[in-house]
Amino acid sequence: MKAKELRNIPATDLQSKQSESVKELFNLKFQLHTGRLENTSKLKTVRKDIARIKTILAESSSEGVSK
Image (tube, rainbow, N blue to C red; front, side, top):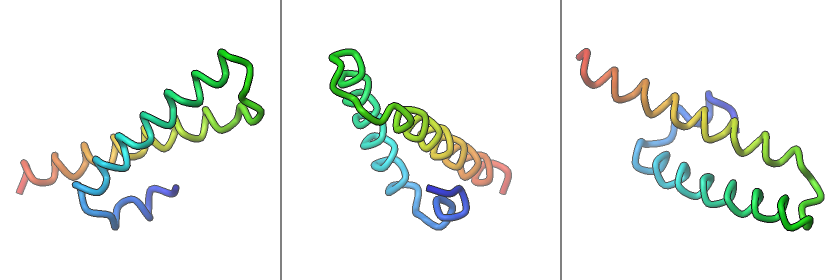
């Protein structure tokens, strides 16, 4: 998901999306170690999505402090 799209989502929805992504990352890692994961690039994509969400949440929290 693109950062521009994520900025339009409310913070509470972003937090739930973050927790879903963390669960998905855990499942993908589990599949990788058991040898059932076919598309290993999905790991990188999910990790980057989590990082984007965390960055946008941090930006929105810092904007609230500076106002």
